[in-house]
Structure formats: C-alpha cells, structure tokens
Length: 130
Image 1 (cartoon, one colour):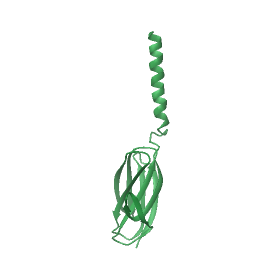
Image 2 (tube, one colour; image 1 turned 180 degrees about the horizontal axis):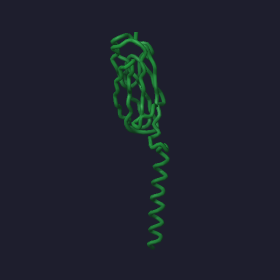
Image 3 (cartoon, helix red, strand yellow; image 1 turned 30 degrees about the vertical axis):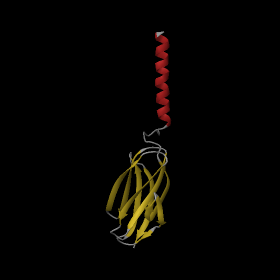
Image 4 (cartoon, one colour; image 1 turned 120 degrees about the vertical axis):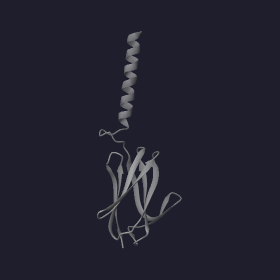
C-alpha cells in the first residue's frame, strides 16, 4: 500500500512539473507576446483611433498593444536621444489589450519599446515628432 501511495505521489509531482513547464519558456519567462502594436493620437473604447507615426511637438502619443500568451507586468519605455521615460503596465489575461500615453516635449526621432518583466524586448516602434 505504501509503495502504491509513493508511486501516486511521484506521478502527481511529475505531472505538475511537466504541466508548468509547458507554459514557461526554458529561459524562465512567460510566453507573453505582442500580437499587435500601433501608435496613434487617442484611445477610445479600448481601441486606437487615428493611427500615426508622425506627431506634433507637445501633443500626446499613444501606444496600443494586444498581448497574448501570459500574464504579469510589461514595461513601456519612450526614448528620444538621452531622454527616457518608463511606465509599468499589468497584463491580467490572454488575450489582453492595454495602452500607454506620453506627452511629447522634444522633437526628433523617438522609439517606444515594450519589454517583459525579465527584460526581453517584445516590441519596438519608431516615430517622429516635428
């Protein structure tokens, strides 16, 4: 009877380990991916309006994201030259839509990057501020 119990517990532990491994990449990160990413002038009803890659100085830019494959935090980082500003967003399901906004106070070439909690770059978009 003890032997049967030991075998059952061992098989259950193995099953749990294999199940968790199926949802985690070998590098330890979740399998979160950016399915869609867009830049624009506004978000209404959880959807991007007025998609754009050029913005006026002192206007707001929005990055709209659709993610899949995991939950947790992502970081959105806006960069222009030496300037950098980051925002952390929570992803609560799969699929998940979210967005971040930034008032653009410097002209030039900008990049907005989306990274996972383990630092992996999930998406990068470039745009111009005139």
